[in-house]
Structures are given as structure tokens and as C-alpha cells.
Amino acid sequence: MYWYLLLLFFSAFLGGAAVFLFKGGNHKQLKLVLSFSGAYLFAITVLHLIPEAYHVNDHMVGVFILGGFIFQIVLEQFSDGIEHGHMHQHHHDKAVFPLGIMVSLCLHGFLEGMPLAGGYKNELVFGIALHHIPAAFALGTVLLASHQSRNNTLFFIALFAIMAPLGYFVSDAISNGGIGNLQRYFNRIMGVVIGIFLHISTTILFEAGPDHKFNRRKLIAVLLGVGIALGSFVSEL
Image (cartoon, rainbow, N blue to C red; front, side):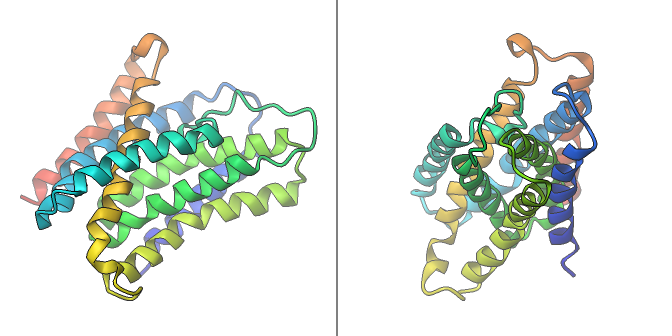
């Protein structure tokens, strides 16, 4: 029943644990996955999430979308862009735990899981899962560079991996009126998440290549991501 939650958890966990198998900073396949997931998330946000958020005619939703976009910018001041799979900027000579990165990435993962309670599980789950693979790998790289033990690294990767499923359960409780009167604000909460998705996906696309240029493989990955999302949308018309 909750196969998509298991997919979210294990994609992030195994993506992070892969840091023990692959060394070095040049991971071309991960970059292609990142480009695909960024394009897919952008298309799903535009085709599904934004129209659904405005379906209730709440004109304040746009304010919360903008707020989510800015909130993600603030988060990245602490995470150093690890949500985009960045891993080449984090090197520590001392055993200093990257608390800011861990907290901001967990909050990011939690918020990304929230739209899954809105009826777009099949459309979103694969994009989020793919997006979390390079993010978790980058987190593992940062933790090892911070001289964390193998067990500690796996524990914190698992902590990040469980955030998206947890976001789903909290969002589901809100949408069904299980948490106070928050149900009336559900679309505004989703507006924040939409803003985060827009920032993450567009940043991934703009950073897809030097001088904002795509090589052929990355262009194919982006077009494939958009094409799959568009195909899913057209099939529901």
C-alpha cells in the first residue's frame, strides 16, 4: 500500500550509502539523474501542483509560493546547495558535525514529501526519489569529509531518508483534518512546498552545465523528464 514511501526511503538511503562504494568527485551519471529529476519536478509542479493549489480560488496561495521560493534560498545558506547534489565544496580538516547542512536537508526532505498526500503519488514519487539519490550521496560525502564514523554516517543518511515519508504522514493528517484546524490552510502549506520545488528544479536546470549550456546527454535527460511528466498529464485529460 505504501510502496511509494518505501521507494522514497530506500532511494535516499541506498543513494547515500553508495558513498562507500564510489570515490571521487566526478559522478556524471548522478548529474544526469539530477538533470532528469529537476526537469520532471518542474513539469509536475507546473502541470499538477500549481493548478491544484489555485483550484480553491485562494488568491493568497501565490504569496505562499513566493514565500516557499525565498525560504529555500534561506535554507541553502545552511546547506550549501547540497539539495542540488553539490558535493565538491565540503571538506573539513576537523571532526565538526555539519549540523546546519543536516537540519536544512532534513527539513527540505520533509517538505518535499508533503505533496504526496495531495493525490499525485504516482506523478511525484519517482521525481522526488530520483532527486534524493544525488542529494543523499552528497550528504554522505559531507559526513565522511567531516570525519564521521561509518555507523554515524549511515544513521544520519537514514534520518534524511525517513524525512519524506514523515512529511507525507503529517501532510495526510493535515489534509484529513487530523491536526487541529490546519486543514483550512492546507493549500497555503502546499504553496510553500510548490515554491521550494520551483526553486530546486529551476536551480538544477540552470546549473546543468557551464555557462548555463546543456551538452547533448543532459539535454536528452531534461527533455525526457519533461516528456514523461507531460505524457502523464495528457493521459489524464
